[in-house]
Each structure stands twice: as structure tokens, then as C-alpha cells.
Amino acid sequence: MTENTWFTVIAPEHMLVWIAKQCPERKLRLYAIACCRRLTHRCSNLLADALAEAETLADQPTSGKGNAFRVSRAALRWGARDELGLVDALAERDPFRSAQLASDNVIAAVTARNSSSWEERWFQAQCLHDLVGNPFRSTSFTAAWRTETVQLVAKQMYETHEFSGMPVLADALQEAGCDSADILDHCRDMSQAHVRGCWVVDLVLGKN
Image (cartoon, rainbow, N blue to C red; front, side):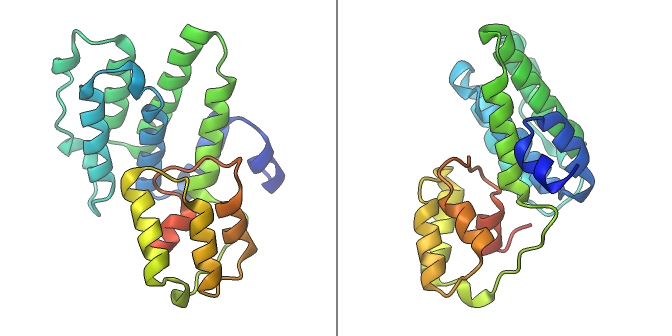
């Protein structure tokens, strides 16, 4: 994997395998969650409950989170096959395996219905860009940039899953003195998908 390949090739399965060892457990779980969220409009409230629980567990600094997953698979026995696969992926103890299963199940479900998985694969590649950033280049963050306004904007997006305010975050960061082109460009890139765990938002909120 090269820097150019990371940002240009739409191959989330290969990108995930390559980045897994460098990626914190939380990021892998948030990737699985972001993939599954794409199908919530087709599934029951049980998937929404599973996603909420998975997000709570992802943000807890403990190991073996999968063991604490409480949404009952048995409760979904009459549910759609897609939904069973997604809940199983979210409940998987190993974070890398969870990410793989979620990605594969969503792509399979979309392909079965639309016969084309390109849009879903593009989204998943974009998710990895958003969660990890540029793995070939480190980006420093100055504490002085973490102003009250910057933190408020970032926290609101993180909690609501609504990231249309990324350009606003860029403006607030720049006003605070941020001069990092990587950070500001990521926030202002209108073609970039953003999800919970976005590397810039995480820098602001002190998450990893």
C-alpha cells in the first residue's frame, strides 16, 4: 500500500487488512458501526439498539467489549437475514473481525438488491480515510486550538452523527490559530464522508 493507493483505490477490504494493525480497537469498531448504519432504513429498531450499544462499548476503555454485548440475537430470529448478519458483526469480540464482517455483510446485502456495490465500497473507503486520515504522515495538534467553540462544534457532531458542520469546525480551528493544511482541508473537503471517529474530531475531543 502506498500513500497514493490509500487515497485513490476503492478497495476497502484490502485497506482494512493493511491498516488493522495500526488502527486502535475503537476505530475498528466505529468502522463496523458506520458500515452497518447504512442499512438502518431497511431494518428494525433492534438494529438501532444494537448500534447504540456498540457505540457505547466502543467508547469504553476496556478490552473484550464483545462479551458485554447484550442485544439478543434470538430476538432477531424472525428478522431479515441481513439484520442477523449485522448484529452478529457488531457483537463480534475481535474488533478487526467485527469490521470485516460488517463491511462484507453490507456490501453483500446491497449487491443482492442493486447488483452494484460500487457506491457502498466507495463509502467504506471514505470511512477509512475519515477514521484514520493519512497513515503515511503524522499530524500534530496544538492544545491552544482546542477552544471552547472548537470543542462545542466537534462534540455536537460526535453526539448527533451530523457532520455537515465540518466546514464550521475548520473556521473555528483556523480562528484559534490552526495552520495545519491537512486538518483544515479534511474539514472543508465536501466530497469526504464523515462518521463518528473522524480523525480531526477525535483530535479535538482527545480521543484515539
